[in-house]
Each structure stands twice: as C-alpha cells, then as structure tokens.
Amino acid sequence: MNTQNIIKKLDIYERLTRLDKPIGILLLLWPTLWALLIAGHGKPDWIVVLIFFTGTVLMRSAGCVINDIADSRYDGLVERTQHRPLVTNEISIKEAYLLALVLSLVAFGLVCLLNTLTIKLSILALLLAASYPFTKRFLAIPQAYLGIAFGFGIPMAFAAIMGYIPSIAWILLLANVCWAIAYDTEYAMVDREDDLKIGIKSSAITFGRFEVIAIMLCYALTLLLLAIVGKWLLMGDAYYVGLAVAAGIAVCHYFLIRKREKINCFKAFLGNNWFGFAVFAGLLVHYSIQ
Image (cartoon, rainbow, N blue to C red; front, top):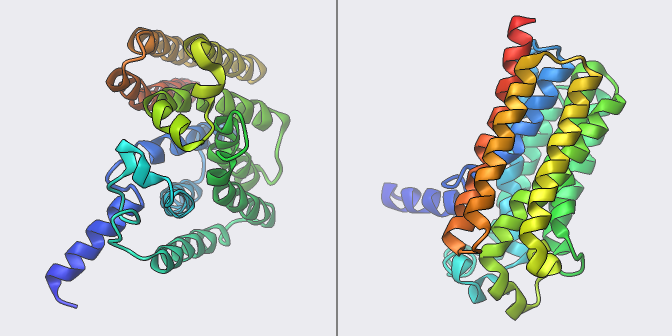
C-alpha cells in the first residue's frame, strides 16, 4: 500500500471514529475528570488520569464505529449522516467490526493496569456503549441510556482510585444522565424530521413541543445534583462559581434553542463542552486553594 492509499485509509478511519469531531470525546471526558478529581481529593494519580483519558478516546472512537454499523441502513436517509464512510462504501462492515474490536481491546488492555473492580466495571461499560445505538429503536428517551453509557467513567474513576464506589458517585452519575438528556436533545432537535421519517426514537420526538422546557429542566436538575455533591463534600465558593458559570451557559442555550432553528440547536449542543469545563474548573480551583 503506497503513501497516498495509507493517507486515504487513515482519513476514512478518522471520519468513521469521529476523531475529526472531538465534541463527543469532551462530553465523555469532563464527567470522568470530575470524578477523578473528587476521588483523588484534587490530586489523582496522573498515571490513572492518563489511562482514563486514553481509554475515553479509544472507547468513544469504538462507540462511533459500532453506532455507524448499527445505523448503516438509516444513515443514508438522514441529511447529516449520508456521507459517512459505511454509507458511501468507503469501508466494509467487516473492516469496521475489526476496527471496533481493535480499539476496544487496546482500551481493555489499559484498564487491565488498574484494579479488579475497575476491570469488571469496564466490561459493563463496553456492553453499555455497544448496546446504546440499538436503544434508539425502542426507548422513548434513548438519551437517558446514553447518559449512563457516557457517564460510566464516573463509577470506574472512583473504583480505580478508591477501590470502591461511594454513594456520591451515583449522584454524580445521575447528574450526568440529566446533562446528557439536555445536550443530546439539543442534538436530536437537528435530526427530528429525519428521525420521524425513518422511525428512530429520540427525546426531541418524545418531548414534542415541550422539548425546550424539558431541556432546561434537565439542566436545572443537573446543576441541583451537582450542588448536592458540593454540599455533601463541603466544597468551597470556587466550586459554586463554576456551577454558576455552567448555569449561565445553560441560559445562553435557551436563547439558542427557543426558536428551534437547526443551526442554533447544534451550536447549543457544541456549547456543552464549556458547561462541562466550567464544572471541572470549579473543582480544580477548589482543590488548588484548599
């Protein structure tokens, strides 16, 4: 295989794994980093952080491949996804399966450097990630399932650092589920017409004309649960400033999505990176000055 073909193949893999669109990695990474900071009292083992960072990139990439395999019959009917590599036959289903397997095995190899509980949890995390694409066929709000799958790095982070999963981890996971419903409903608003046409379920369809209210309610629940976490852990003012900034970002999203314009709904979705970062920054500053 010559250099030109190698570059072309790498470009196909990049688009298939969505490495050219890192927002998914960031939405997975922020809650994991929240958990690592809390579990490590602001000073988590950097080897563990590196393992989780790399594993997040690998598993999000594998999840995208699995998602495209599951949706290969539908993506060609949706405007936003009609040029994905499996739809355009730039890569075969067999090769896509192989790529997902390799990415998952490398991620599992990294997890094997951690304790037994984390290894066991990683198997469940893989099952959640692999099964999520199929929930869009029967769950009214598959975004809730996505929130569990995207947030499963939270209990894994506590398990890796503390050796067990404290109650606070499940509150943090619930906060992530509410956040995922908020941001992925914004994302689903972009595809609502196509999803209705092909019979895919989403929260944007289920919530109907109340979807904007539902999104804002989910943001409010996310922030409430994060405030409960802060109260439980006796967080200082810096943490709550981070939550206040995140709340301000959520309010900005309301003004973006209220008219239900696709381009602005997508902008709101992308803006959730800053929501997650605001919470992370609040935690980081809190532990830095503690």
